[in-house]
Image (tube, rainbow, N blue to C red; front, top):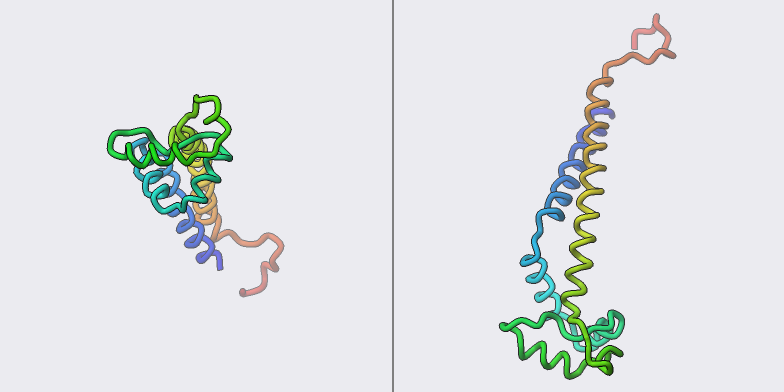
Length: 139
């Protein structure tokens, strides 16, 4: 029973360690690719709802997707559009995702190393006898 506990805990450690390292290793360019892919999959209603909630217009104002950005800004219903100073939603989401990934990666690394500590302790003390057991008993 203890052997399966050690194996499962070690597998959880490997998965959590891998995910934590990937959270810390993802750079801004990869985050932009991910946001662009998800923005392309969103429906227009979802985009408008996101723009309204975040008070922003469009995803990223870059050269390769200028036409998409202009059409998104034209159909935007955010309150900031009335003032004329709307940030792009991509910049807001990138800023938030960078902070969230760093926090998640750090917390995940901390707990993954506490799991490996649990595996080490289980291996270290697995052969200890139970002090409450009857010493004259064979098993």
